[in-house]
Length: 315
Length: 315
Image (cartoon, rainbow over all chains, first blue to last red; front, top):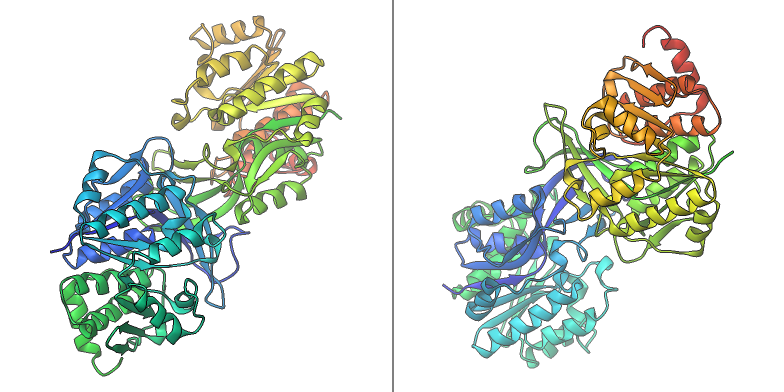
C-alpha cells in the first residue's frame, strides 16, 4: 500500500465545556485531547490500515507523550517526531460561540512543533513517501512551509502524489508568506480538498464552476469540495459526484474535515471508485462530528462500512 | 508609601479538578485563572494599598487581557507590562497528587513572559522603585535574571531594600545558572523569605540555626521562614518571633506563599512591628489557601484584620 506523509503540528486541545465568547473568565474545561490537523489526519489514515507517517515535534511533557502514545497505538509511524527537551508541546484552547464560530488561543509557533529537526528519520520519510498530504494549518510555521514544499517537490519527482486541504482559520491568515506558500503548493497538488469558500481563495476565477475548471486545467486531477453538513462534491475532468452528509447530532466538528480527507485520500490511493471513497469519507466525517474531542472520532474501515450500511437512505 | 517593584512571569493557570497524576488523559479542568508568583505578590500588595508595579509581558490574547484586567482593577501599576503581538501568554497546568505534591506543565520561557522588553516605562520603574521583591520562579528566564540583578543593584545603590523568596520548584532547578543567580541575589537581600528546606539551600551551613546566623552576618536584616501549615518564624539580629498558622481547610495552597510574602513585606515597609506584620501575613496566607485559584484569595487590610480578630486564640 502507498505510504502517506504529513508534516505539521501536533497539539493538545483544551475544550471549553460551555458555549460562549473566549477565555476571559475561569470556566469549566476538558482536556488535554490529542490534536493538530495533520495528527488527526494521520490517525484516521492509520485506523484504516494505511501506512502513514507524521513529521513533527512535541515537548518532553505529558502533553507530548499523550499524543505520541495515541498515534503509536493507532499505527502511525512516529519515527519523524522529535521530542524537544526545551520547548513545550503546542496547545490550542477552543471554545464554540453561539454562532458555531470557534475562538482559539494557540501556542504553536513558539512551541515544540513550531520547529523542524531534520533527523535521519525525517530524511528517510521524505525519501520513501508515496503521497504527501498538506494541511494549511501547518503553514503558519515558516519551517513547516519550507519542509512541505521540499517534500512535495521530492514526492512529485518520484512520481508520487500530493493532496492539499487549505484548512484556513482566521487566526492564521495573517502569517507572513501564507498566500504565496499556498499558491506554490496548489501548483504541485493532484487532489485538492477545499472547504466552502476556500475553493476560490487561490484561483483567479471567483465563482465555483470557474474555479474548478481553472484548477483542473492547472494540473489538479480532482477537487473534493467539503461542505460540512451540506455534503461533499467530487470533480474531475470527466465527472462530478455529489455526496450528501449523513445526518448526525453535531457535538464537535473539530477534526471532522481531517477525518473526511484522510479517509477519502487513503481509499483513493487504493483505487476505490470516487463515489465509494466519497461515501465512506462522509461517514468518517459524520462519526467524527458526533464525538467530543478532535481525534476521538477516528474509525476503522469496518466501522465506516457498518455506518454507511446502517445509514443507507438517510444521506 | 514605598513603591515595590516585581519583575517576572505573568501566567494563566489551568487547574485539574481531580487529584491524580499529571495530564496523560483528557479530564475536567478549570481555568484560566490569573497567575504567576510575582503577579500574585503584586496583586496582594496592591490590595493592601501598597504602590506596586510589575515588569513582565503577556500575549495579545484573552489570557493576557484577563491578567492585565485583574491587576489593573486591584491597583497594580502595569505600565511595565509589554503586550507581545507574536508570543502567547504564558501558562501553567497544575494538578495535585494524593501526596499534595503538584505536577506542572509550563509554557513560560518561550511564551511572552520569557522575554523582557526594556521600554521607557520599564526604565522609569527601575529608577523609581523603593523596594525590589524577587521570586525564584522568575529566575528560570535568563532575561529576567539579568533584569532582576540590575534592578537589585540600582535599588540598593539608592538606599532601597530587596526581598527574596526562593520559591523553588523541582521543574525549575535544572535551569542553567539558577544557583549562581540565587547566590548573587542573596548577597543583595535585606529580607529573605525561604520555605522549608530552601533556608539551607544557599548557605554553607546545613542546619537551621547555622543558616540563619550565616545569613544575618552576610547582610540579611531579617529571615522569615515560611513553613505553610506549620506556621512562620521571624529572625533578626536581636529576636526570633514564631507565628503559628491559622487553621483553615486547605483548598489550594498555590499562591499562599506569595500572599504571605506580599503582606509581610508591605507592612514591614510601613514600619509595622515584625510580630504584627507576621500575624497579618499568616492571615493573608490562610485566606489564600482556602480559595481555589492562585490569585483569587488576595485580601485588603480590613479583611486581614477582621480575619485575625475572628481567629484570635485559634492560631
